Every structure is written in C-alpha cells, then in structure tokens.
Length: 376
Image (cartoon, rainbow, N blue to C red; front, side, top):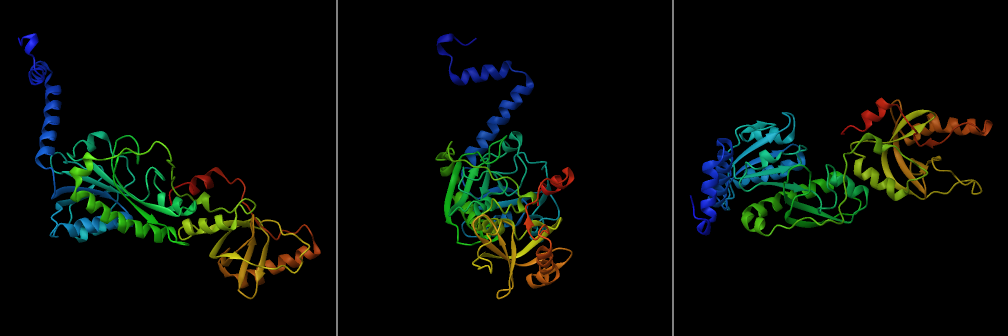
C-alpha cells in the first residue's frame, strides 16, 4: 500500500492499471501507445491515408503523390480510401499504383500518421479518427464557418459571395465541418464565374494549402483555432428542385447566379402549355422594347428578339434571355418561336384566354419531388 501522503500521479496510474479489468488495461495501454507514437513521429515525412472521390479531391491527391519524390520530403507513404471504383480518385490511384481501400477501411491500426479527407461525403467515426496519431485533416472549399456542408462552391455562387477561400481543418466526430481550423486562405470570386470554374481554382489552392499545412503540422496543431460560433451557414446538397423557375419572385441577378451555380449540371426549367421545358444557353439580362408600351408584361411573359435570336422572359425586375430550349427536342429560339410561340400569339389574338406564358411550376408528385431532391 502506498502511503497517503506520498502518492504520486505515476503511482496512482500503476495502481489503477493493476486493479483494472483486462479490457480497460488494454484500452489505456493502447492510448499510451498512440501518445508515444505521436511523440516519436512529430514531423514529416508522413505516412498518409487519403479519403476522397471527385475531381476536387483529385487535385490534392495529385500533389500528395508528387510530394513523395520531392526534395521537401513531406510524404513517406500514401494509400487511398474510396467509395466507388468509378470515381476520379480511384482511377488515378490505380494508374499510379497507390494501394486502394474500399470504405470502410480495415487494418489501419499503427500504419498511418495522418489522415486526409477531401470531398469524401461520409462521416468518420471517432474510433477511426483515433487510429491516427496526428488526427485527420480536411480540405474544405469555403471560409469556415461559412458554408458548412456538402455543396459550398455552389452556394457561394448562388448567394453572390464576392470572397471565399479554402480551409484546412481537423476532423471531429459526429458532425461535418465543425473542427478547429489549422490553415485558411482567402480567394476573390471572379465576376461572372461558374461553380465549375470556382471549384477548379479552389481545388488547386486547397491542394497547395494542404501541403503547406503538412510541412508544419505539429506547429499548426499547437496553434489551431476553434471556429467562430457566429456567421455559420449551411450549404445543402444540390437537387433538381432548385432548377425550377419562379418568375414572379426571382430577379435577373438571382437567375444569373442560379444558372452559373447549377446550369451546367441541371438545366433551368419552367412550364409551357402544361409541359415542362428546359431553358438552355442563358445569355443574361435583356434590354428590350415592346411594341405595345401600354401593356405591362407579367412575369413569365415570353417574347422573341429577332435581332439577337433570343427568347426573352419577364421576371421580377426585368427580362432574361435564352438561346435555345428543350421541349420534345432541342430547339433554337427561332425554332421555338416559329413552331410554338408564334402560333400561341395568334391564338391569343383570337382567344384572350389562350396561354402564352412560361409558368412557375406548382406542386408535383411525391415521386417527382423525391427524384429531384436526390443528389445530382
């Protein structure tokens, strides 16, 4: 028995371990091994396990792969975890002879120093995170805590942000994008850029920021900062329901941002004579003059601009133009006017109740809403 007046912290730990059940002793010993490993490998080169999927993640993986043979000596070994065989990260890993693990990875214990997650889409459990002595890093394309969630680049464009950036943070269990910040860099959003263009620029910037973080990881871990409790916003998944036009509510600028955010993946849509129609080749705001100045157009009104071969549609605060549509097939603005719009205008002259508007879609079946809200 240790005298009460002379019990030290170390003696208490030894006494606790001697009396503890076998499973508890093993758990404590496992934590001690992780602490010892962390102390013994305090700097690069690192043994890395990379979690990723898409083209945004691919930029970081490419730079990490190149770093294995660089003079900076940052990466000692590199292996990859993917969710599917048919994604850019998997194909690149196979082409470059990187070991590939399917999710969830097995045989991780004691094999890696650091984990890196870039555009992966799965929540990592605490048990897995704890297997990495230096934790797991995440490259996120926003200035956290703004635009937490799966689609930060799309929402940056959609909401008209003029400044964004990339963040390297430490993964924490249970919630996405809430961990402490290790490194962060601003990026000016170019005027009129698309989500694809911005995503490509942030992917490259994020890859270099990751390398910079790994070079001085221990120091950055010591000076990491918690995310602000104010100013956080959420960037939900992009869904097909976002593409439906609401002409009476959306301004020219809002439609422009929506098109640049999702237009290359999901065509903007509206209703025409009871049928869905896709609006293609957006050209921005139109400055038009109507022959009848006394008649104020209502949102959804459509007119054909012969000089520019454009369909102009009235929205909340002006007119926006499209060069083509997809009805039964792809039609130019002139084809749509000659085949559909011109006939409707003639009918409306004879019958004032004839429809000649692009209408905002209302309702929809449960099956349609489910399909539209799936990830695109």
